[in-house]
Image 1: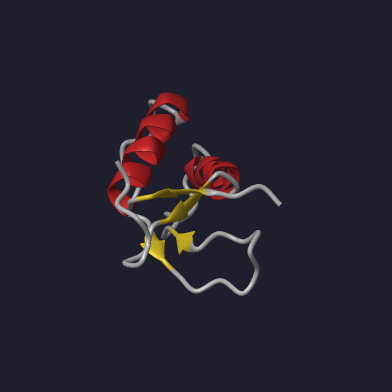
Image 2 (image 1 turned 90 degrees about the vertical axis):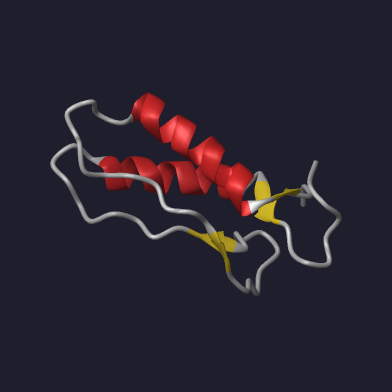
Length: 87
């Protein structure tokens, strides 16, 4: 198992927001990313964070966001109070 990098919610938000804005349809004016929040995870491979996904839109934004969550949850874990400060 590869160790995931700890990251703050704000830093993860910036990464997800940037990627979402680069890849989503320019036609969609209503979908956006919310700040990720920490959740308890029973499985070390599962993400320890979640994001509220927007409702389906005609431009496929929720599917794109689900893809981003899947990709980045394999790389990052949200840092907790006991983790070292993320620089």
